[in-house]
Image (cartoon, rainbow, N blue to C red; front, side, top):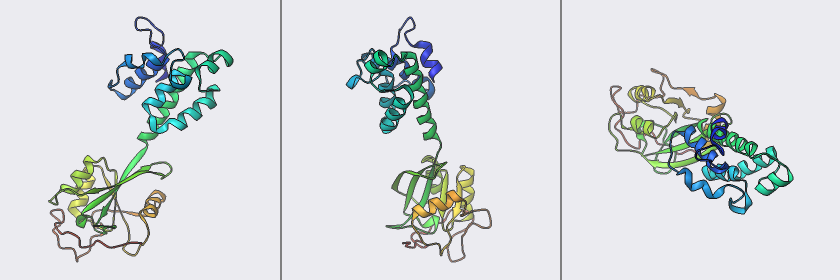
Length: 253
């Protein structure tokens, strides 16, 4: 990103300022141009809010949920966050500020891509041990390297018909399913969609937070054809996804 930003910073014909250069590089990196470049014109030459460096201001505007981290890391690398201090006291070239802001913004983007979405079948108010009996799905965003939970939300399941659950989870960009058991057809459809399934043993009581950590640690068994955790008391055909509701939904504390 920084090479892209520096290639347009103060260069003719547009003569983009530091904030605009960072925005331009971000748009090239993300492949979109929703924010007009001209809208960042007022933030150059020390005119960003609170006297903040324009390059830093662009970065925190584009990644507002990472504001504190971006400000802290920017200050650590160039010495300050305010334009006047950087230019007059520390003599930091504006090109260095632009490059630093781009590097930090790029690292934030990379961190966001290094996450996985995990789905747990859910009943009316708790974990549903069988995939096909879920009335809801708990979707959990997890940082792939550390296992840190980034977000979690409960969603109503789609209309229950053959193939509906795997297709819906694929649209939600789910990568992993944790379930007590699931049918062969459901497992095949999940696999086809690039979604891996892991089994939570029936006697494995605990919270979903614990299951996330056990998945991260490699303690959960991956569901495979012929060993998907589906027992005979479930009424379904292996040629289609389960049609039952609520059975197999057990409370865990």
